[in-house]
Length: 229
Ligand code: MN
Image 1 (cartoon, rainbow, N blue to C red):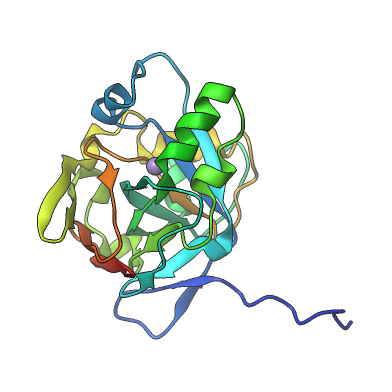
Image 2 (image 1 turned 90 degrees about the vertical axis):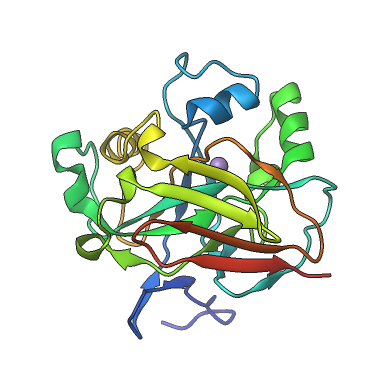
């Protein structure tokens, strides 16, 4: 077989303390998964099932990168999130076995064109331009699940230019890691290489050119990046 154009490169993320890389197949995201953030966005935390959206696989950005401020927004927001990497796929996965599908975990940031998202919500139109843009998914190095401690019971934080913006407990997620995997696998057959951004706590705020961002989750490799001037 030959391709009519050069095949696209395989998106991937680093693995902590390893020369190997984790190939990224798809990026799924959970919306509205911390009650404080649901309230700060003007919604009722208990009223809805998990909300899923996605980003292209090649939206991933390596720790240490300088990200160009995206086009068509004047309100770029950070959302620090626990990221699940799926190692074993499946459909209709039950909560009891969900963790056996997890390869590892990382800290990531769901970059958001907040002005475009607000317009989409108001108009009832899709979120793709608000959420699924180029370079919208910075992800730190993955840590294998066996070496991750308990990232679902950890502190999650982000600092911008040294100032803490979000500082929360992943245990406060409305939908737990097993519940997210079970629910998502009823909409899509999960495949090895899928990443799942699990939602952001409160404190989302704007990023500007020249900002330096550092974030972490206890037990996982940290993530840092900047917004280019
Ligand atoms: Mn998010």
